[in-house]
Length: 322
Ligand SMILES: [Ca+2]
Image (cartoon, rainbow, N blue to C red; front, top):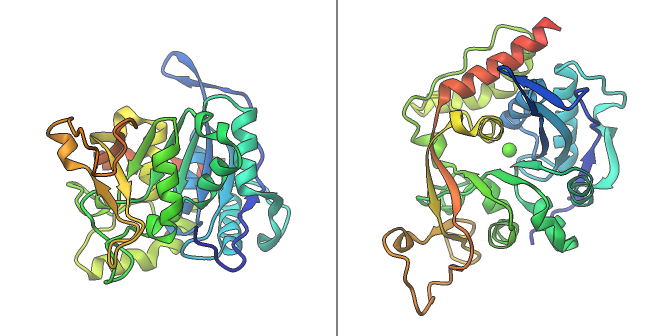
């Protein structure tokens, strides 16, 4: 497992944010979605976290940070700033806002303390894999796990020498452990969703309150994608949105048997899909190495950008109304 200097996974300060445990949806009273977010704390992470915190149907139990585009410490600071932008009171300064409990142990504790937990992972899978290795029961405790990471057509986004997606490439062993050992349903938001969406739109929420923070933290990426003749697209936000409203957000999906490449000159971290399994289900020799006894994993292959866009705008508007 990849270990970086200083890569202790901190449990970020975040207590229960929303009083009560019921949400009014239409005329029905439904339990709120109990959500834990594991994040590497960069631009789309911040928007995804804001969306979850502001959504009336979500109770965020905690946010854990991991290594990724920035250090765990910077990720925690970015999240603290996001919490402040969403109206929460963060007493400590940004760089001392975390609690001493390691993230992996916090995940185990929260999953024990709360039933029906939804874990949304929007960074490398290091914390989740560590939790699983520390407590064998952890793999059965969450109600579901939604992950932004990996790919299914071998599309890389790190550098020109790899076909790995960033989160999986950053800790391929962790990704492999999570995909091959977890016993609760897993839904993947693959990188290709960023590139092959049919109706991507540039977000239109950059003129009001909380949006100022979102706009600042995403303007570089937005500019670069436009320079590359690509429209700006959602990424980590899709994972949170799919956790909140799977029926609305997920337009198309594939049920796939997969493995994560742990070697390979150019393919380390890439998801290997058993495409033959999509055609026929017989493989008496099982020489391909993909465990046929494991349930298939849901890969989202098309999403409703308008619903995600609407959730993002509502998050901003709710903040403005407070
Ligand atoms: Ca992320």
